[in-house]
Image 1 (cartoon, helix red, strand yellow):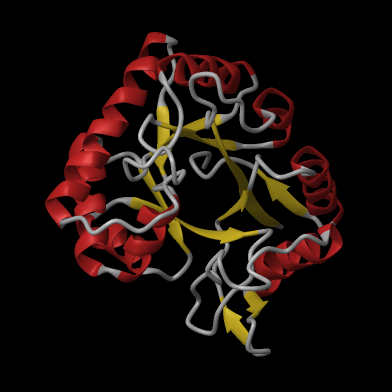
Image 2: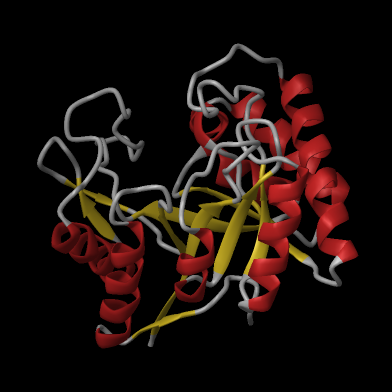
Amino acid sequence: MFRVDLNCDLGESFGAYQLGVDENILPFLTSANIACGFHAGDPGVMHKTVKLALENGVAIGAHPGLPDLIGFGRRSIEISSQEAYDMVVYQIGALAGFIKAEGGTMQHVKPHGALYNMAAKRQDLAEAIAEAIYKVDPELILFGLSGSELVFAGEKIGLKTAHEVFADRTYQMDGSLTPRKEPNALITDQKQAVSQVVRMVKEGAVLSQQGKDIFIKADTICIHGDGAHALEFACQIRELLGKSNIAVQAVGIK
């Protein structure tokens, strides 16, 4: 039987700004990536989201990003590998405090947005992020774009890794995600997205924007919790995975 993890980026509200439907979407997930205050989130939101995840039995991961609240961490910023290392250690530590205070444990780390995409291609950033995670806790699992430099760096240093695929994003021939600023970057048709997910898990392939299949490994599926139909989408994916004989469970469960 096939198995896969279902993750979502959560805790991305901050201050007076409310994003996502975290409380409603959590029951459909097996892993939660919680923002750590740089691209989104604040201490109160982090605390609340950790508690919600634990109440729902959802595995918790840190979701460190670039220090860019205005751009939601999706704008590329020129940073050194040392800066990447320091940012990741800092943000993991911030979330780890709340998790420990609530009696939980951290399962994984998944970089956010531009930091994630930059590390997927830049070996120096990928290695710095992997080293930061390893030195904080070598038992943590690194989530990275399937087949990317980030996953390879994690494997090289000795971390457990999870190859991540996206339900609502399109792909390029090199295995990268189509940039959000380009046409057709996002899949808005729910049936198309669900069909893509099942094929990635069962066949290890996805159709690129260039019209050719690329091979892909799917350990964990990301769905975005801030879309207009995020809750309905999560419900549909979870239901169809079950109908397709694909077990849904957190990557940290053996």
